Length: 422
Ligand code: NAD
Image 1 (cartoon, helix red, strand yellow):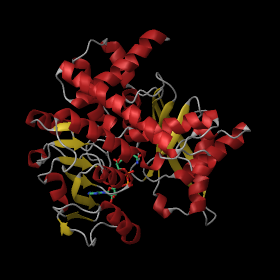
Image 2 (cartoon, rainbow, N blue to C red):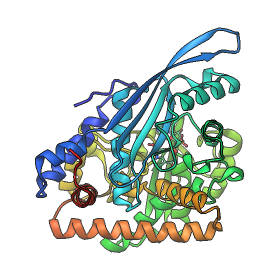
Image 3 (tube, helix red, strand yellow):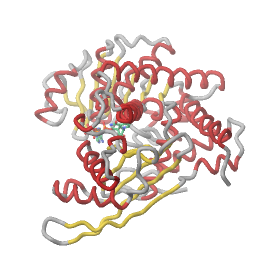
């Protein structure tokens, strides 16, 4: 088992994924040797990158690209620029992508990449040279039919544009489908920015219908007000939910009558932090996780609800906007308590689903209206939720275990058809 040493991820995320896979497999009839095969990353590449800095010196950087699985299709997953990137962390994140794409029933495997660097300390030109050198060194690893990167922590649409351009220059033709999360002008998809938060809303809405909770009037706490948290909050509010708590890395706010989310978004544009918003009172950050609300949406970081604090959680439903916000030990306790947890690989799959739509549109050379993207996203999310719900009901397991069981079942089914070239 890999142990990720990182300030932001103090608990081994890869270890958490392996534990979940073992729990799911124990409820299924899967050949243990096959299971061992699909748990391992298929290919991990390390590249050492000399980069010309603005002062004229060369500096060495280390980059990774992991293809966890290509059983269901090309490896798919983001590229992270962060000082704490490690091979173990990238392998864990790549594995997650395999199971997420499988639950979402999209024809992709799982991949992830990263470079050990602090992007805030590099100039735009240095970032461009680093990105291009990384892409050039991995030119035979990437490809629209092989391995398709996307943005992750520390990277963005501009990074994807540089990767797309470098790849295209080497191949001698424009290959826009080699990355997703691109700017619209070069083949990005409408609706991609909002896709993850929108998917969070769809799964919470389906869950409420299933457990007989009225989303209209339900109280909601949202941890993290970035891309995922802010869109989820806005769309849940549009469904009639009352957003009573919101937090970000700097602090938290509370209004028992509901926080006006569109106004909060305008406030954030100028002030960059939720504290100071006039329509709510400042509160302690931990109140967001432990307040008495109907629905909690952790949309910030990994390992927020752990064995040490899980007993303080009072929400009835938790929609995991973030990846891995609940540790396996805490998850088991929540399940016993009767809290419904919509697992990350289902709840936040909207982002990769619209990435898939972006790849499809690039390959067709024909682009959909935003309403069409959102309509197709809703169909995929509702279908995925129903599949997981049915498995959870028929096997009497949590939604998380059910999601992993479905994900494993689909990978194994394809392996059985294709056979193992051993
Ligand atoms: P982001 O950087 O846009 O936003 C993160 C938010 O979390 C910010 O508001 C930040 O202030 C806040 N935050 C950080 N530390 C916090 C703390 N200790 N307490 C409260 N808030 C804190 O990131 P994002 O794209 O919204 O991603 C959030 C999570 O969702 C991550 O786990 C990410 O891996 C996951 N995710 C994102 C996407 C996507 O498409 N963006 C897709 C799938 C999963």
